[in-house]
Image 1 (cartoon, rainbow, N blue to C red):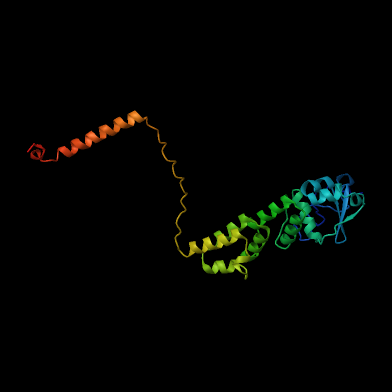
Image 2: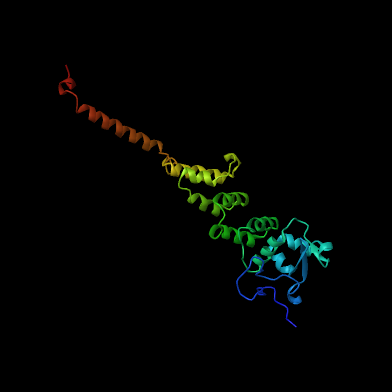
Length: 249
């Protein structure tokens, strides 16, 4: 009798080791060892055997489903009510289990459910895939980056814009005011750069120095200083006067 497979064992039912589109990197079917799962989820009629705690660690949605929603948590099979493609859920489970077979066909659905379930790990892995491996057209990547606010991806896309034609190919046909504020800034900045229009480097404003403290002077000292100043000025004036004007008539 064939032994059951572990949850992280790759299927290799075919004679060769070449991966086919239908082959799963991780097996979440009923063939896995019963000790490796404590919950069953149904998605599009397909059953997935999972560890509730593992899913709960990656998603508050599943934490609430398994451990706070008493009625659902006691069901032998829990049907996911949200519209979730089974293939996308397979990839989601793989991503939180250490696998990664993302491709351009499933990336948007995986992103959709990862955001819907507040799952950070799949979101980050999907973003990395879009940055490094995806063959989607720049505009398709831009639409995804704008939808999920992937700043790193947007910066990378705009860095590749070298001409106005490149910019036109990148941006979808919609009003610029509909974009996120940071996207509008990126568009304006890049257009200025490729047009050769110099922009001054913003200089940080320097706060003015506080006025020098006025030290009060004692009245006697002030009067003496005034006398000295008067004498000095009189002496200065006298040096320029004709001596004959100072004689008595």
